[in-house]
Length: 274
Image 1 (cartoon, rainbow, N blue to C red):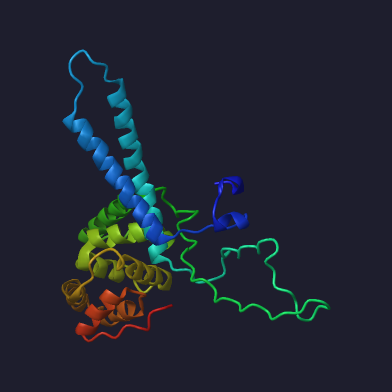
Image 2 (tube, helix red, strand yellow):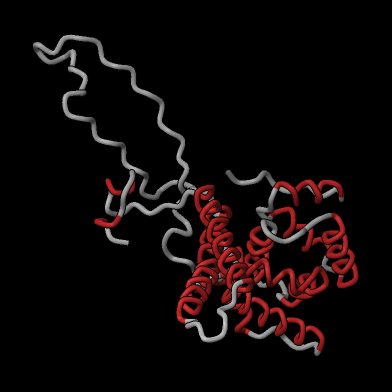
């Protein structure tokens, strides 16, 4: 989007990029509602014999376009809510004062008057992640497809007692902070598969770091409750990797809900990052 096309506060800075998660979530809901409304109308109002179906085809194309956008919009939303702003980006610039509303400087001759109180800064509603680059995949569907393929590769390697393919480790390292990829990968692997993946890392620090980061990210969208965690620990007991698995779990930046589940099992996760 060019600077000329922007409106609102972002138009005051050519480098501004940001997403308001609440507003984007509302947009996604509206697109879904529009898609469902169009499809519902088309299904209930087929053109009678002898009447041109051109208008119906156009409406169907609009519905398909809306459905296609949902994958991209949902991916942007998932990135936004799982990557809070840690600072260092371009903030929304303050609005310039309107002509004639400036407060006279008491230190300037003839200025006089008392400086107006400075209002507190507005709470930022935007985050930079998801507004531009979307990682290695253009939409949620592509990320889920890649994760499913990698999960199948891991499962096959574990079953055949072969090393996990290098391509899987490469993908995991590159996408350990991807909310869609990590969700589907760990969902497909399940507790036993995750324990097997940890064992297959053979103590490699880079691989274990990627597994840990992905655990934290996956906890945002998949269920890591007491049942799931207990199954993971049971499999770790079987492989003899329980201390390592506990270390990875307690060191991962998981959600509050997962932290509470871990607490019920006597695990004490680290303080969650701000």
